[in-house]
Image (cartoon, rainbow, N blue to C red; front, side):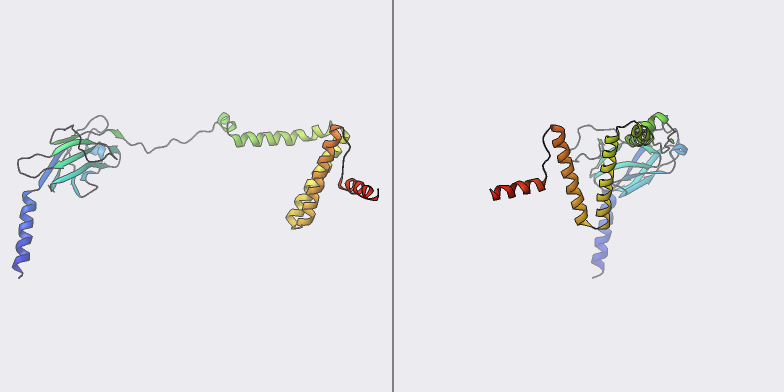
Length: 237
């Protein structure tokens, strides 16, 4: 009984060896990457490492025992970028692999009608630049920041406020101080947790604003006490 599994294993090995090939290609050096020393450690892989092979000093590479199927070939290097290719390995000893250009993200079906020559030929496209220059101090650029403009305006207002207060009308100055005191009382009441006093102060502040608006328009200010008194007189009549 052990002979049957062994026979099947040998047959599968024979079939795999018959329908597999060594994929060959060449990296063509250019001004972006003139030699293997500039390229550094690199390898050529199919489908993110399912099959892979190394790069020799003259730029040639070989990926052994590639079974029939469709693959995406890419060169993995630290400092250089290469184009990706679609490789279709066909069954049969006389059929050569079909090489097509491939753009990442595009579907594999249908296949592109553009065929590239075999053996594969690839050239480095660009060299990665990992160096980022340190930003220099720019005084004009600093003041283009909106936050810096707000801080500058706040500083100017703090410096100019004493001079504005000196030249302000006494009645208007007293009114500003009263409003600041009321706002401070509201904030302290709310922060201390005394919500009743805080809401009372807010309502009183709103009432004062209404009276001030009525006075500026020429009408007599009306308060809740006046409304109550009028209501009482109407009832007596």
